[in-house]
Length: 429
Ligand SMILES: [Zn+2]
Image (cartoon, rainbow, N blue to C red):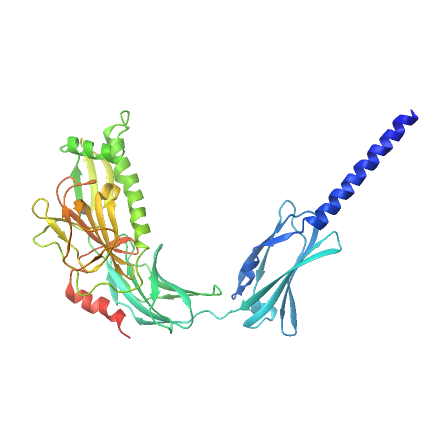
């Protein structure tokens, strides 16, 4: 009996020593880290800050204090909430007596009531939102059309034009924060939509002002396309676009997959390419239309696809279809740099030329390329030959202008007067 008692006591002692050793080890060798401190570097008018403390073991108090001159303000004081190692607090510098300018912020993590670790951040308090003055903006833009603005900001900002859900970036063109931006109006934008200029300064203060540009209604044609007549050709096209393995997929399902899913995927890809524009003007004068071409299909057209008398799919056509003789030579609509020359799904063999400041031109369904990515091209230079690659049912060129990767009508860009009146002003003070 004595022996057992002794053994138990020894075991308890060993366990206790283990726990103490483990605790000491944790306390001294696993010092807590604070993740997210960089959020404190820039303090705008109002900011929600989330800090993560790892590991959370034994942490019983977190104190965040701001020091500025003789001032000392507590931004947060408390423990970690249960089951999380994050704290969130709001900072409103003006409300707590901090002035614009530098401040020092100290985050202190206390463990076991006595052990303290502190982390220091040099912060800039900036509660002044940027001021924005519009130097040039068009009076009105059409649904599906384009506009250009010249804007001056009071400090360094990220500035963009917002049309509904879509943001068009701007480019800073001078030391004193003059920006220019091109924007498009997606064809289904309501005419009551307010186009806005949004400027966000380095601290995160945001200024939003209405651009004051109205949106004019544009009438888009409705076209019905009967797939029944051309089923054989379309079948070949869609099955090759889907990559073949479709024995069990019926014609309508396959067509919808191509016309809807692949279309979305390819438009997404064009947007991604559209973001690679150079911050300089690479073009001059109006854009040119493929010579001797006839318009087969207009921008904005609402297409309804019918198969054996039933509506099976819909889409919006976002370019001009231009046809001439078979395998016509396609000229660059304006000078620029080729940003894409390759296969682009339903667009087939496609060339995209960057003209700078977010403006690009797109040439789809080509047979072959006469240019390579990265190559500089001059206005009128032959870049390819028309064909019917991708989801095209006849030889033609699908042409459109992109702004930040969004297709807009090229009609305006083909018009020298429009370019002179609506675009040129943004390039002069
Ligand atoms: Zn087209």
